[in-house]
Image (tube, rainbow, N blue to C red):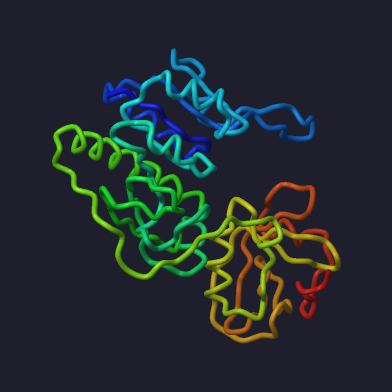
Length: 307
């Protein structure tokens, strides 16, 4: 089966690797263009491109997937099926109708819950105890296609968006291989999505600001869901501080106000207390709360609400 694979971030790599290991004929990989990153603003390839560079597979990086030249090149590849894993753009009708077996998408949620660009983050932020992978036959809607296969995965309190993303990427890879096998032998039957729809819109940098009036549990989930990007943050005497690891502890305190500064930083919330274990001051590396407190005149009564 001739496959064209669309994917951009690290989440897509296990699925692409699984296809290659299973012996499928991946005739091309489509990924986002290189972007300027870092202090030097050097062009940096996306993770999927870096992974595939040493393999003899055609790489396409269109700036516009509706461009006629790209569509012609894609058509000439004569794909039997197109597989999409976190590519980053919605495919137009011309592409969806191109392969005889259609286009399938590996989505990191139990659809129809968490349709959109950030399903992993929003599942954690909303306090879900389980999520999963859904492989759908794509249509023109946003993650609205019929379900081919679906499998659940647990979300533990130790998970953040990074670790859960890694687990789901591996699950997606194994489920993709199973899907391809079932498509080949004709044993798979697409079924419509059922149940309540929840959206998972893209996150912006400013979405990471902590609302200390929320409960400690909600803030705990928020910090985990926002890590590693855009990362939860707050302000301390006008300094922007990223909060990277916290835990919930019993007690009461005024929302945003520091209640204790021993080894960790204890902060009041709308309900309960948050113990900040790890944080990242502006322009510095992540550090423990104890390291942060060293040399700082932080004391009980200071507030994380100031800007």
